[in-house]
Length: 412
Image (tube, rainbow, N blue to C red; front, side, top):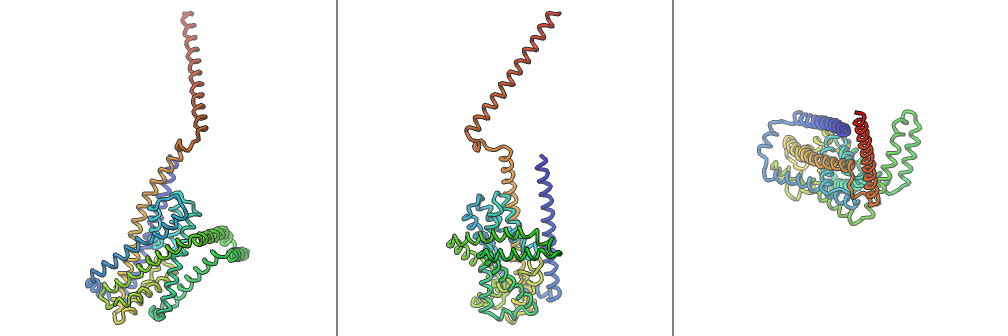
């Protein structure tokens, strides 16, 4: 009973923390969004743009958003399958899709992976296995995102001019994102690089004011290096599966990038299908550049960047129409994905609670099938012996009682 009470309190505490993060994340993004709209545009023109929206193209944009959501977990499910984890594909699919929600409410979009490891562990998957799966997925996913963004910049260097004053920030984000990926690949491929970084941290830990921060992190960093190397070996071992996952992620992200094009079409902006690839490249460029903005969902930078990109792509449109396109893009790809991802999380939580309840019952009353024949026989014999002893004691007590009663009768 006390065990259940502790878990209930723990769940309440976790739920409170989660709700507070949701409220904070949404409050920040909505505040920034409204601030940008009111300071830089005429709200009447935005309302008018939404009134004249093309419903057919809007439906296509919504459909692509849903398709992206449905395709996103497939690579994770395949990687979980090759790791031979004892978890259903339904649960894996749900875990993978919680990423949109938890990334959306945390700075630098870092909340998804830790929660996914936690969710895997609650369903009986070892943290080492789930960490390996997520690192493999990260390596595949970011490989395509970075590659496509680099190709976009090479083909359309004019994208660097489109973001205006945000160019330095986006270039920093762009470079940091690519360098971070290169570093992770080096860690995965070379043990010498990992050892060098560990030794570097050890040297830095000798500095007094850094000691208390670095020393506790060294074991965790060593484990991260080991997990990354194991994940890379797994990908290299299953080259065919890795290629399939890469192609699936490529299709998934291209669907995501195509949403922007149909949003422009929905606002009756004169974009031909020949411009579609240019629009997709612009989307990829902005997203990778705004990843390292330290606000939930990259709020602030990504709105300014997308408004600039929209105006640049569809030359001749006003900033109000550009802001309208940015607003619809944000509603679909951020708030919309967060909403359906949150529903996904609630379904996962319900399934996980059922699993944990069943797991606790088995822990208290283990199945007979897990007991060997010898152990079962010895248990039965012990039970019979105990019953015989109890019966003998009861008989002796009864005899003593009867003898006492007879003596009392004789005395009477």
